[in-house]
Length: 449
Image 1: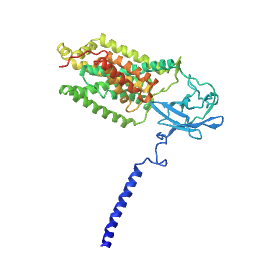
Image 2 (image 1 turned 135 degrees about the vertical axis):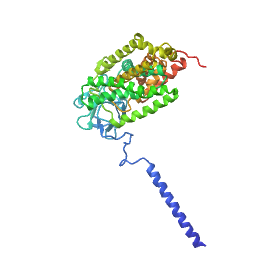
Image 3 (image 1 turned 180 degrees about the vertical axis):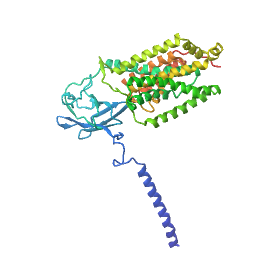
Image 4 (image 1 turned 90 degrees about the vertical axis):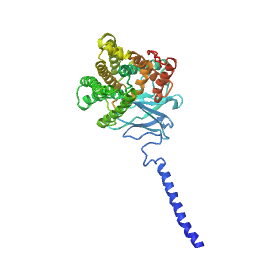
């Protein structure tokens, strides 16, 4: 009996040992990989082919624990200097970035000594610890910073507020171009078009292909993008939305179709241009300072173009026959049709106009962001819907007002909250206003039931 019992126990012990070994292997595989195999640094940075690095010293001695931040092109990261004063910040691509030394982490009374900065590197006006940096021929840029005693220069709250207000106005105007087009589509068809984001992306992509791929002049690329935007809007209505309307599909079904169309177009764009962010010619120009406000010549052109296009849309809606017919259909499509208005024809014009506005917005967004990417329009989609809802569903002028509020709220909120959360501030403003005025700022109350 004893021999039998021992024989039975051995397989059982072997099975338990095997299970224990498998469990241990599973745990090891699930643990974060070691430095030899990891694609991230100890502080969570994703390792790429491009990085800024250097040493920070004071009176010849390394300084540990100084926080370094990098920002640009919608990308942000930070790290701390090690015991040897060394730091490294990885970035996704070669571009111009803003490098900032968190002066709160410096020793008391110590600043970055401008006299010891590398050639061509100077602090941004109004600061002592922020610099515009960019790569040379390689994917590595070394910026050694030597600290010295001195007085830190800071920007007052009023100057920061003024700078954010101007930036918010710029952002709100380019957002308004996309929002007004989407609002006109909703007003005439009651369709919440999720594929409107891809109409924005289309404008940037056409300009990119014409200028960066085919090496045509920038003005010709912009003209082609605007014309292409109008043709894209016309094609979408002719090939898809008009047949679906005539088949009598409901609003919910049409909205689901728009979601599917958005996803399909998004990945078609990615297939053809890849996942990288590409720059249009002249992106990231040197800023021009107007007191505390820094604007580039592209920002000034963008503001001027946005205002001119918005005024043109206002004239179209209030002074032309097609514009007046568009407003009539938005108010009551059945009555407009009974009055002799060709509803399908007017809706076709609305889609073309919406495509043009989205293309212009996409080009300006490519310079504001900066960069063209396959999903760039998707980053605006939630803000577009927020602006339309805030201003009042179906009204272009409401979308304009809502876009300005959203744009200013997004930029000004960075004075108090991290920039990663700035888009959430627009949704907070939306919720607050809708609690007070559910129909939106310029919307009309509708009787239910």
